Amino acid sequence: MNGSLNHRELLFKAGAGLAGGALGWLPVELSSHGHSLTEQMTAWSVIWSYAAMAILSGLIGGMIVAAESQHLDLSGATQRRFARGFIICVLLALPANYFANWIFSAILNFGGWSLNHEGSTFYLFCARVLSWAIMGAMLGAGVGISTLRLPNILKGAIGGWVGGLVGGLLFDPLGKLMASGIGSQGLASRFIGLCSIGLAIGLFIGLVQELTKAAWITVEQGRLKGRQYRVDAARVTLGRAEENPVGLFGDSSVQPRHAVIELKGSAYTIRNLAVQDGTFLNGNRIETAPLHDGDEIRIGGYQLKFRLRQAAGAVRASATAAASGLSSTVAAAAPALSGPCLIDSSGQRFALRPGAVTRLGRALDNDIVINHSSVSRHHASIEAVNGTFELRDLQSQNGTYVSDQRVTQRPITDGDLIRLGQAPLTFRA
Image 1 (tube, helix red, strand yellow):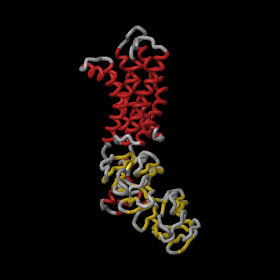
Image 2 (cartoon, rainbow, N blue to C red):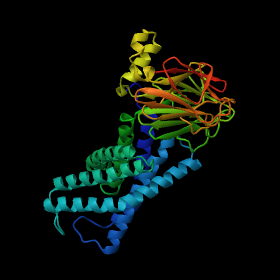
Image 3 (cartoon, rainbow, N blue to C red):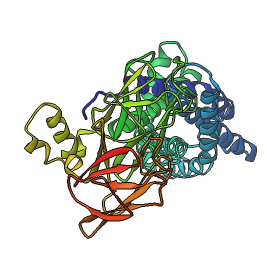
Image 4 (spheres, rainbow, N blue to C red):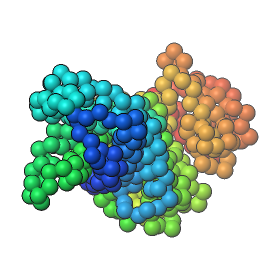
């Protein structure tokens, strides 16, 4: 990966999980007070036990989701994240806890545990580890569900499962070790054990997310210099408002919703949403443009860098080679640079959609947005048909031109000079 792990996010998520475990210890302790593994629990004790575990799960999950903001301010957005994570994890905890308890009881019975009879402590250890791994997977899935993206659910479940496994392994040894130093074997042991489980779940959820991230934004200049934000959704907004996944606070020149990064297939694009203050990519003001690894984005006083994983392949490797001044022959090998595109007067490239229709115009719902007063809202389209490209005018007011000849429909070839109203473009196949 061509960038370091976001240690700040890992710290926040580990700390959030620990805090959730510490807060959730109280209802768990109250529900288990006076009960042992070898005595029959009443119906109310069972219900209270399930409720306590649901509250514990909600607190750990809610705190981890809230930690996505990477700051300690109890803003409205942070509180809403916590509430969302809490509710999701509480609901998931009820069936997960039932299944975990079934596994727990089955292993204990296999190890000789029963009413009024203590069996092998080894089986108790194994039962606790597997049960917490199940609960951890549920918590991680809940954190992922809060983003409404299947890949994040899977990543969260994997991270939570590993975290629950590690936390379960540490529960008894660490709890007893720490508790022995303060002269308590029960209450303190469970407190330390639940804190370690919460910490491990938060840490490993964050770690799996970091190790598998495909794209992210690094703040190079501005109030939040050094921050990293994962781009892990189909649509990620950037701006001053708290609700943005990429929050750029403390700069009045940044609009509440200034720009948006969109993922279509495997390609990322950035689109300007600001009416007055624009969005700049590699020094050029843009409306819509494709993003590549290392691209620099300027929004207000913030300088950002867009990063992609090196494992994504030759597209970004060859783009880097071209930027380093290597021969044009090497650069031409990059699919993103040699593929069909339009180049405007500033040199900005706009990729065409292979095998599909690419719409051009001034409106923001176009594939390529041309912010020029002479361009109609939906001005023209380019369609790839059997290896050729056809330009079609969409009844624009100021016309579509190829080599200064007005056209309604015409095939275009590499190097053709296209004009939408008074906005010049060069077609490259």
